[in-house]
Amino acid sequence: MSSSASTIADEVARRRTFAIISHPDAGKSTMTEALALHARVINEAGAIHGKAGRKSTVSDWMEMEKARGISVSSTALQFNYTPSGAAEGDEPAVINLVDTPGHADFSEDTYRVLTAVDAAVMLIDAAKGLEPQTLKLFQVCRHRGIPVITVINKWDRPGRTPLELLDEISERIGLTPTPLFWPVGIAGDFRGLRDVRKDEYVHFTRTAGGAKIAPEEHLSTDDALDREGDVWAEAVEETELMTEMGQGHDQEMFLAGQTSPVIFTSAILNFGVRQLLEALVELAPAPHARAAVDESEREVTDPFSAVVFKVQAGMDAAHRDRLAFMRIVSGEFERGMVVQHAQTGKPFATKYAMTVVGRDRETVETAYPGDVVGLVNANALAPGDTLYDGAKVQFPPIPSFAPEHFAVVRADSAGKYKQFRKGIEQLGTEGVVQLLRNDVRGDASPVMAAVGPMQFEVVVARMKTEFNVAAQVEHLGYSVARRTDAASADELNRQRGVEVFERTDGALLALFSDKWRLQYIEKEHPDLTLEPLVAAA
Ligand code: G4P
Image 1 (tube, helix red, strand yellow):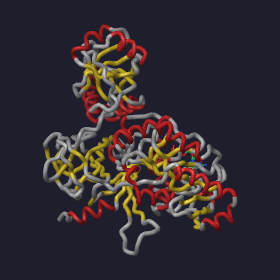
Image 2 (cartoon, protein in one colour):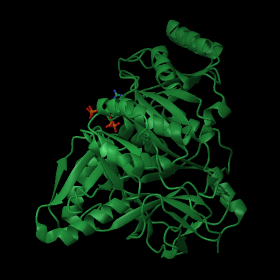
Image 3 (spheres, protein in one colour):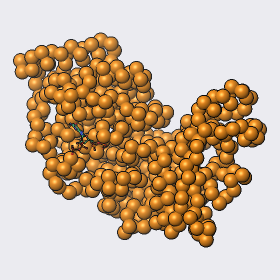
Image 4 (tube, helix red, strand yellow):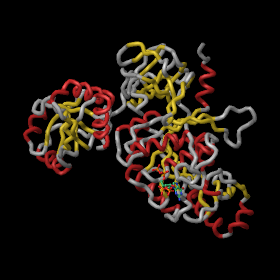
């Protein structure tokens, strides 16, 4: 029997679904582990930095990512967390931490994962400041209206000053940082945090190897001044400066994506990690209604609906299968329920529903909005698809982002043409790459378009393991794509360094060797249709 709307509303209210966006090496894995430690999912941290030599579910997940090199896995880690101020009998918060691919390469997967979250934690290395991948990911959050909490990590190591780092955030990305917890001690001398809102000092004590939760002492301003002297006074002065500049936390501005609460941390020492978890529970939005293609809103308490945001195949040799990950948008999910697939109009049985963390799969019996569930052998499902029960709903497709890498793919042997076609079609449907065609090149060697070149390697690897076809990739010398139309196509095809293609969704794309060529053509032929593709559907 399914739950009442009030049960669903209660479940929704305690959920927080977010992703960590960061440049590689900023400490995402270490922070994930530190969060798991604070939520007591694991007892000891250290698997990542090799200090404790202990195996855990979490580390398996991340080890797998590292071992594979290409991170094709994007799943979610779910845990309960009871904030320190919770009253007796309060239900714990349910945290869904959705993993973004960790590889330096950038792929469409990363974008898609961000369609499944309600908030993001932007993790910045205190010595490096904003890095390219953080910036790109941040742009996606802004585009989707995802509120962002900023975490300045590695404060235990020498780095920049807090004011410099926050200036960079407001100047380069136009987001106003609003500090919640300010560091006491310069980068490299991390003593604790000033809780800006409570005006108290949280002093941390290191544990051996940073393996345990760092003990905290809470001191009043006077005691903090006695203990830390000028170091405390400086933290107070700096935060007051921020407050005077109007940079105090404002929940509405945060939810509107205009401000970002800031916390300074050391993931490796577990300093500031509890503060981050509590800020997530307190400030990040719970799952909310989602707009459908017809612009109606699916409320969280409406009957079940979900969006597929990721399809993953061949996760390991023992399970040669395809998993579709859905983020639940509304209602209660019960394993075994038969739902409708909006794209095909066909029923879909959910007997094999699981959560997937690394190699571990666990059957899911019940799930609520905000949760991520993997469906096994979901061959009909593609990213962006809608599943629902009750009144029909279809959510807008996941935008396909502007590709910057292009390559021809060919089967090594002509004899395998049939499997080759099948494989390419399949991978195109799953959204591993975008597929482009034109009459000149013909069908035997379609052109793949990707946000990151690693997507091509995934195609070659999967063609081999799943379709038994050896394939070759030949990179093409294009780096910019623009959407065009049939009226402009002939003129564009006559230009040097330009080629027009039709994408599987019917869009016409003109590829240019570089942005200079594009600019030249735009200037010479102002009448041609050339639209940027940032988030074209
Ligand atoms: P990623 O997932 O974002 O790529 O980063 P990851 O957690 O793997 O961390 C990258 C490196 O930064 C690791 O060091 C990790 O130990 C270190 N690190 C993460 N957070 C902190 C922090 O708060 N303080 C300090 N000082 N270091 C941090 P490594 O050199 O790759 O490994 P190891 O030598 O530590 O084992």
